[in-house]
Length: 449
Image 1 (tube, rainbow, N blue to C red):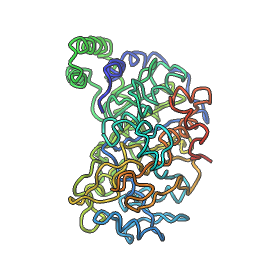
Image 2: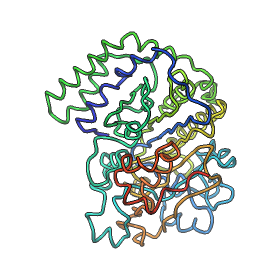
Image 3: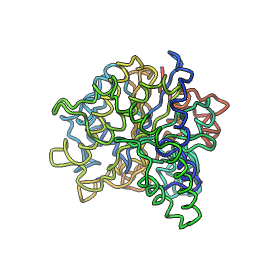
């Protein structure tokens, strides 16, 4: 997503380690202590994941689902049934089924970006209450990450959590998916690390930042970026190789990221990112972190065509979900082996959901409300939160007539539950969630036991 010039300048100092990396091997900081450790792992599904096919009603509501979705509907017989609820998961999510059975997997229905609670009547009569530039990839990514649905934001919710957290020598907010708004803080720095390979501090990284800021047409801005990155390169040229050595040692985590079909390491982008997240969690005491926030991403979810093939269990979306499920399952098994199952939460985000109505290319178009997934040992077991919208096209839940569902839970209510579990107190909720006053009376989604 496109960041503001200010956000890019803030993150430039952290790219590939930044100045804070210089203190990495200064000495062991205060180690994370037992139950005091917490890590949140945000997985952004870029492009707009079709959550309505990720989790499907397989009881009496299946008929309405199938009729509305038409060519992209998942056949009931291939769904992975979830015990105790009237839903089934997409067949590509089979690797995650054991976690549901263990009470470690939850879903949140019809959550999305909102400025204020909306009904269809209000949506039609009060444009000032809608998120700005709704259904736009760039804007909705910014709304999810910055949590300002009607104004621009230079900081993201993970960065703002870091602003109010204890300072450590090495930043505890880390992105393996590039310089995204979510990790930008006003006072804090994030580490922006590559998903694979060495942490080279070189011209390629300068060029990437220059390209990102070029949209501002500001020669001064480009000069500032170059100056910042040049300084970091000079300061950290030798330290990058030391960080490489820590990451190159796969540790305990790597053994869980093996593809059973090939015997080789899982090689999708999301798997490479989550392997490095697991490794950073494994190294938490060396890094001196009692709290960690990670941002990872998976691309390709803008499925306007060929989302589902003829047998409904294959197609573009099935492949994307397979990569996500395999990587997430490997990650959480690694976390369990570390004895940290109750102290790590992985959760999904995405630009928006998809239309329930299929288009002529066996795909779907930009929607709004969506289904999100949460995985963690401290969750309320076997639970699906929220209310599923009616699949009636043009009905009370449909903003436009194509199955763009008006969210009934805001992204703030969803993310607030994870932030509170992570340790954000009541006095900091308004800072981390700038529009929290609109939602505090309704409360966070009760994800945790």
